Length: 183
Image 1 (cartoon, rainbow, N blue to C red):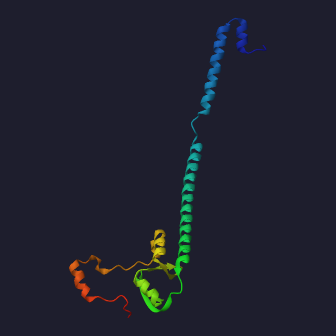
Image 2 (cartoon, helix red, strand yellow):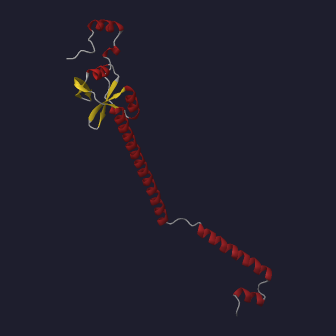
Image 3 (tube, rainbow, N blue to C red):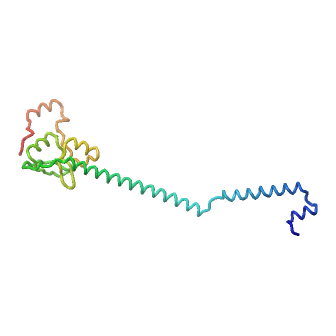
């Protein structure tokens, strides 16, 4: 009784050689299919939860990375703006003439010399906010600054006569006030 049951049946003559090979082949294919199905098993509940947690973590990491990139870009933009204002600010403009301008709802005053006052009145210079103070920059530098952040520049007061008809403009031309009038 050294052999398998199958070998013993073959020796007894109950099973012929051809039928034995066919049964062996069928059994081999059946076990092979079962092994293949084990590899494609449906994921368990724990595996589903783990995959979902990994996906949520990846999404959270992606959003955090995006926020960090935006913060770095904003920081770089502010550094570039600060450098631009520092290199283009006009120095030595202090004088005796008070130049009043509106910053939001407050009226601020810069004391400037007569030459700078004329340039400010002629819109050749602009006022910019810089480190809790105000500095003067040229119109070209103001253009570069406004491309990066318009809110740094103090808005220019536009002429009130733009929306008037030609008849109204002619009427108000009679009462012209000189630009260099100092109160």
